[in-house]
Amino acid sequence: ILHLPLNESHLISRYVGLKKFRPTLGKVGSNRWEKTRRQAEEATLDLAARLLKNQAERDSETGHAFPPDSNWQREFEAAFPYKETKDQLLAIEAAKQDMGKTQPMDRLICGDVGFGKTEVALRAAFVTAMEGKQTAIVVPTTLLARQHYQVFAQRFADFPVEVAQISRLVPAATIKKVKAGLDSGTVDIVIGTHALLAKDLRFDRLGLLIVDEEQHFGVAHKERLKSLKTNVHV
Image (cartoon, rainbow, N blue to C red):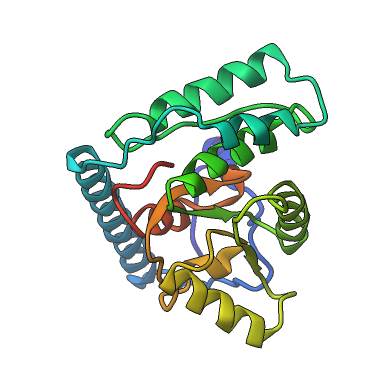
């Protein structure tokens, strides 16, 4: 029996967690809880150290400075079937200015559904492709990966840009070809889920990383993405 002061009963709450993760209960008087707490604390410190290391490396790296808009860039943007909003144009211009610097970009684009964030990503990816660099677009779900792939493939159809996708809906043989294309440089833009975090996936000349709906990714996932190459624009 463990006696607890009643005036602190508000500190007790129902456990809420993933169904697949069932924590082992410790016995009263054992050191299991202290050991678990210590392991969690050490893991947190390790992660914090990796975060600092990755950011320090990015701050000391020199990224690729992309040139001003080309004729093809203007042609690509003119094909956008809608009228850009004021904020959308500001976001596009800000991203381009960041990509024009040697300091690797770290920019967050915020906006509600339907406000045109994807077009900002499309134009940044086009800038990247025109310089012979690769773009990786990471999304949280297979459905979103397929939707983005269809949009990107359609918009880039009239230009010499190879767009591919990687997710569990893509046949294994196709994924193998896409990975080979990323390694050799024949694939310019890849859209995928967590599968893009696989250790056997290598880029020939990654220049831009786009994380869509980044709130659905854990810190460790995002740092794994950044560690793919410390001097890419994000």
